[in-house]
Image 1 (cartoon, rainbow, N blue to C red):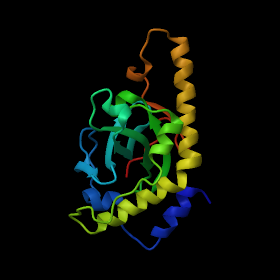
Image 2 (tube, rainbow, N blue to C red; image 1 turned 90 degrees about the vertical axis):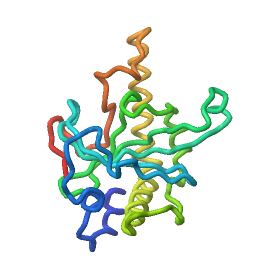
Image 3 (tube, rainbow, N blue to C red; image 1 turned 135 degrees about the vertical axis):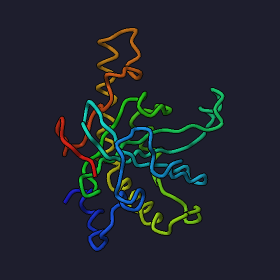
Length: 205
Protein backbone atom coordinates (compact mmCIF):
# COMPACT_ATOMS: atom_id res chain seq x y z
CA UNK A 1 0.00 0.00 0.00
CA UNK A 2 1.40 3.40 -0.96
CA UNK A 3 1.90 6.16 1.65
CA UNK A 4 -0.92 8.11 -0.01
CA UNK A 5 -3.32 5.18 0.31
CA UNK A 6 -2.20 4.31 3.84
CA UNK A 7 -2.86 7.77 5.23
CA UNK A 8 -6.03 8.20 3.25
CA UNK A 9 -7.47 4.93 4.61
CA UNK A 10 -7.97 6.74 7.92
CA UNK A 11 -10.63 8.80 6.14
CA UNK A 12 -12.62 5.78 4.95
CA UNK A 13 -15.53 6.64 7.22
CA UNK A 14 -15.61 10.28 6.14
CA UNK A 15 -17.99 10.99 3.28
CA UNK A 16 -16.69 14.50 2.66
CA UNK A 17 -13.49 15.60 0.94
CA UNK A 18 -11.31 18.64 1.44
CA UNK A 19 -12.88 20.06 -1.74
CA UNK A 20 -16.35 19.75 -0.17
CA UNK A 21 -15.33 21.53 3.01
CA UNK A 22 -13.32 24.35 1.43
CA UNK A 23 -15.60 25.26 -1.46
CA UNK A 24 -18.80 23.24 -1.13
CA UNK A 25 -17.73 20.86 -3.90
CA UNK A 26 -18.13 23.55 -6.58
CA UNK A 27 -14.55 24.40 -7.39
CA UNK A 28 -14.24 26.92 -10.25
CA UNK A 29 -11.56 26.60 -12.94
CA UNK A 30 -9.63 29.75 -12.02
CA UNK A 31 -5.91 29.86 -11.30
CA UNK A 32 -6.25 33.04 -9.24
CA UNK A 33 -8.93 31.67 -6.89
CA UNK A 34 -7.46 30.24 -3.71
CA UNK A 35 -9.41 28.19 -1.20
CA UNK A 36 -9.47 29.52 1.40
CA UNK A 37 -9.24 33.03 -0.05
CA UNK A 38 -6.12 34.09 1.88
CA UNK A 39 -4.67 30.58 2.26
CA UNK A 40 -4.35 28.62 5.50
CA UNK A 41 -1.37 30.16 7.31
CA UNK A 42 -0.07 29.27 10.77
CA UNK A 43 1.99 32.24 11.99
CA UNK A 44 3.51 30.10 14.74
CA UNK A 45 4.77 27.12 12.72
CA UNK A 46 4.99 28.75 9.28
CA UNK A 47 2.81 26.06 7.69
CA UNK A 48 0.76 27.28 4.74
CA UNK A 49 -1.35 25.76 1.96
CA UNK A 50 -4.21 26.44 -0.40
CA UNK A 51 -6.41 24.52 -2.82
CA UNK A 52 -7.24 25.58 -6.37
CA UNK A 53 -8.18 24.28 -9.79
CA UNK A 54 -7.03 25.48 -13.19
CA UNK A 55 -6.16 24.50 -16.72
CA UNK A 56 -2.54 23.78 -17.54
CA UNK A 57 -0.77 22.99 -20.79
CA UNK A 58 1.22 20.37 -18.87
CA UNK A 59 -1.51 18.53 -16.95
CA UNK A 60 -4.85 19.71 -18.34
CA UNK A 61 -7.64 20.38 -15.84
CA UNK A 62 -6.15 19.84 -12.39
CA UNK A 63 -7.23 20.29 -8.78
CA UNK A 64 -4.37 20.40 -6.32
CA UNK A 65 -3.02 21.69 -3.02
CA UNK A 66 0.12 23.85 -2.92
CA UNK A 67 2.14 23.37 0.28
CA UNK A 68 4.49 26.04 1.66
CA UNK A 69 6.59 26.91 4.68
CA UNK A 70 7.20 30.45 5.92
CA UNK A 71 10.58 30.85 7.56
CA UNK A 72 13.47 33.17 8.34
CA UNK A 73 17.17 32.77 9.02
CA UNK A 74 20.44 34.68 8.95
CA UNK A 75 20.58 33.67 5.28
CA UNK A 76 17.32 35.45 4.43
CA UNK A 77 17.94 38.43 6.70
CA UNK A 78 21.30 38.96 5.03
CA UNK A 79 19.48 39.71 1.77
CA UNK A 80 16.96 42.02 3.45
CA UNK A 81 14.11 39.57 4.05
CA UNK A 82 12.52 39.40 7.51
CA UNK A 83 10.86 36.18 6.37
CA UNK A 84 10.29 34.27 3.17
CA UNK A 85 8.34 31.33 1.80
CA UNK A 86 9.40 28.06 0.17
CA UNK A 87 7.21 25.66 -1.79
CA UNK A 88 7.48 21.95 -1.07
CA UNK A 89 5.27 20.31 -3.70
CA UNK A 90 1.71 20.17 -4.94
CA UNK A 91 -0.67 17.34 -4.09
CA UNK A 92 -3.01 16.52 -6.99
CA UNK A 93 -6.49 15.26 -6.14
CA UNK A 94 -8.63 12.85 -8.11
CA UNK A 95 -12.26 13.33 -9.15
CA UNK A 96 -13.43 12.38 -5.63
CA UNK A 97 -11.12 14.85 -3.95
CA UNK A 98 -8.74 12.14 -2.75
CA UNK A 99 -4.90 12.21 -3.06
CA UNK A 100 -3.70 11.08 -6.48
CA UNK A 101 -0.05 12.08 -6.86
CA UNK A 102 2.61 14.64 -6.03
CA UNK A 103 4.28 17.03 -8.44
CA UNK A 104 6.88 19.79 -8.28
CA UNK A 105 6.84 23.03 -10.25
CA UNK A 106 9.24 25.62 -11.55
CA UNK A 107 10.02 28.65 -9.43
CA UNK A 108 8.04 31.14 -11.52
CA UNK A 109 4.82 29.22 -10.80
CA UNK A 110 4.84 30.02 -7.07
CA UNK A 111 7.51 32.74 -6.77
CA UNK A 112 9.13 31.14 -3.74
CA UNK A 113 12.59 31.27 -2.17
CA UNK A 114 14.41 28.45 -3.94
CA UNK A 115 16.24 25.80 -1.91
CA UNK A 116 17.96 22.60 -2.91
CA UNK A 117 16.16 19.28 -2.50
CA UNK A 118 17.98 18.42 0.74
CA UNK A 119 17.48 21.90 2.19
CA UNK A 120 13.78 21.84 1.30
CA UNK A 121 13.19 18.46 2.95
CA UNK A 122 15.02 19.56 6.11
CA UNK A 123 12.89 22.73 6.22
CA UNK A 124 9.63 20.78 6.00
CA UNK A 125 10.36 18.22 8.71
CA UNK A 126 7.58 18.47 11.27
CA UNK A 127 5.41 20.58 8.96
CA UNK A 128 2.11 21.01 10.79
CA UNK A 129 -0.46 23.46 12.08
CA UNK A 130 -0.40 24.34 15.77
CA UNK A 131 -3.28 23.27 17.99
CA UNK A 132 -4.00 26.87 18.86
CA UNK A 133 -4.40 28.12 15.29
CA UNK A 134 -7.60 30.11 14.76
CA UNK A 135 -10.19 28.14 12.80
CA UNK A 136 -13.48 29.42 11.40
CA UNK A 137 -14.65 25.86 10.81
CA UNK A 138 -13.79 23.06 13.28
CA UNK A 139 -13.42 20.61 10.38
CA UNK A 140 -10.45 22.55 9.09
CA UNK A 141 -8.33 21.06 11.87
CA UNK A 142 -9.09 17.61 10.44
CA UNK A 143 -7.77 18.68 7.04
CA UNK A 144 -4.69 20.34 8.57
CA UNK A 145 -3.82 17.05 10.29
CA UNK A 146 -4.74 15.00 7.20
CA UNK A 147 -2.35 17.02 5.04
CA UNK A 148 0.39 17.09 7.68
CA UNK A 149 0.22 13.27 7.87
CA UNK A 150 0.48 13.00 4.10
CA UNK A 151 3.51 15.28 4.05
CA UNK A 152 5.20 13.32 6.83
CA UNK A 153 4.48 9.95 5.19
CA UNK A 154 5.84 11.02 1.80
CA UNK A 155 8.57 13.52 2.65
CA UNK A 156 11.68 11.35 2.85
CA UNK A 157 11.04 9.08 -0.12
CA UNK A 158 8.52 10.26 -2.71
CA UNK A 159 8.82 14.03 -2.25
CA UNK A 160 12.58 14.02 -1.64
CA UNK A 161 13.04 11.89 -4.74
CA UNK A 162 10.97 14.31 -6.82
CA UNK A 163 12.92 17.31 -5.55
CA UNK A 164 16.24 15.63 -6.33
CA UNK A 165 14.96 14.79 -9.80
CA UNK A 166 13.86 18.42 -10.19
CA UNK A 167 17.34 19.66 -9.31
CA UNK A 168 19.00 17.24 -11.72
CA UNK A 169 16.67 18.20 -14.58
CA UNK A 170 17.19 21.92 -14.02
CA UNK A 171 20.96 21.50 -13.70
CA UNK A 172 21.04 19.80 -17.10
CA UNK A 173 18.90 22.58 -18.58
CA UNK A 174 21.21 25.26 -17.18
CA UNK A 175 24.22 23.52 -18.71
CA UNK A 176 22.44 23.23 -22.05
CA UNK A 177 21.22 26.85 -22.04
CA UNK A 178 23.99 29.15 -20.77
CA UNK A 179 22.80 32.61 -19.91
CA UNK A 180 19.14 31.55 -19.65
CA UNK A 181 17.27 31.75 -16.33
CA UNK A 182 15.43 28.42 -16.52
CA UNK A 183 13.63 29.12 -13.23
CA UNK A 184 11.71 31.89 -15.03
CA UNK A 185 11.07 29.94 -18.24
CA UNK A 186 7.26 30.00 -18.70
CA UNK A 187 7.44 26.94 -20.95
CA UNK A 188 8.56 24.85 -17.96
CA UNK A 189 5.73 24.53 -15.43
CA UNK A 190 5.54 21.02 -13.97
CA UNK A 191 9.06 19.60 -13.76
CA UNK A 192 8.30 16.08 -12.51
CA UNK A 193 5.59 14.04 -10.79
CA UNK A 194 5.18 10.87 -8.79
CA UNK A 195 2.88 9.01 -11.21
CA UNK A 196 -0.85 8.74 -11.70
CA UNK A 197 -0.68 11.39 -14.40
CA UNK A 198 -0.94 11.32 -18.16
CA UNK A 199 -0.82 14.31 -20.46
CA UNK A 200 -4.33 15.62 -21.03
CA UNK A 201 -5.85 13.55 -18.23
CA UNK A 202 -8.60 15.35 -16.29
CA UNK A 203 -7.91 15.40 -12.56
CA UNK A 204 -10.48 17.91 -11.35
CA UNK A 205 -12.65 17.15 -8.36
